[in-house]
Image 1: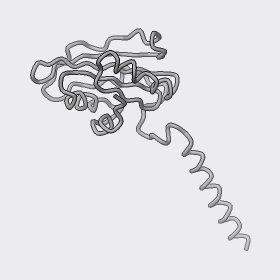
Image 2: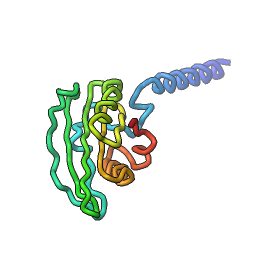
Image 3: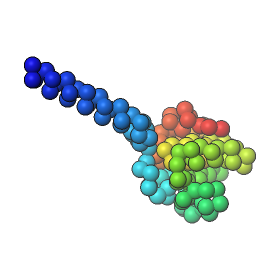
Length: 149
């Protein structure tokens, strides 16, 4: 009888731990960057056949309520220009709230993941997804499925 009670309590403790973990933002998106990650380190590397046009440039992140932000631009395989801006915000809701701002300024992709906002633009949206998928923060598929624009 004692073993059954102990097993039952152990099962309830395990279920409670999983239930609590499910409420945590980071466990619901286990591949999201740590909340304090510097967005510079999340900028994509150039896909095969692409060239970096400008290295990482720090952005005036505070102007949009972000804690930090960096941009990088690329020349695609046909010489087309592409750009990304990655920002760290205080919260996921702050990151999500910025989607309309990026849409208003002509960006074609905006993904909020954890407390980060990732924007990308260029003449071919498929290449924008390819470029954003070259970040450690997401895959091309993730960017496609979670584009808020």
